[in-house]
Length: 140
Image (cartoon, rainbow, N blue to C red; front, top):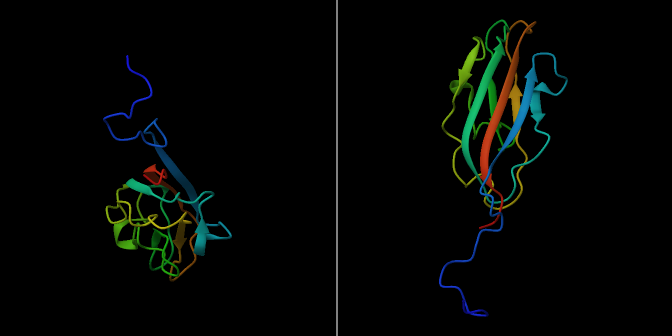
């Protein structure tokens, strides 16, 4: 085998494992930061969002509306999932489809937030698990 020659194929990716990663946040009706609940980690620059899942484990029961949103766009935080994508008043899995692709974290590491700002009577129950599946962060 010849050595010290230029390969005839593209350079390998920075992360040769090609693995998907997740960001997760549990949102409870009584969290003190529920109006702007940050995830523990940010999406890395260059990340590509593959899927978003919002599982309502316990239904939220505010008097009038139960809007949950997920996003990076201050102040509405709804470019990944809007309240219309998520039925927070019923248990089950919601699969928003709007925040996919690479545009959200294209320029820099990007913090993600979930919000729950109900109207009417304050809720006494509610728990959601938000999972964002992404690949990348390799700038490739």
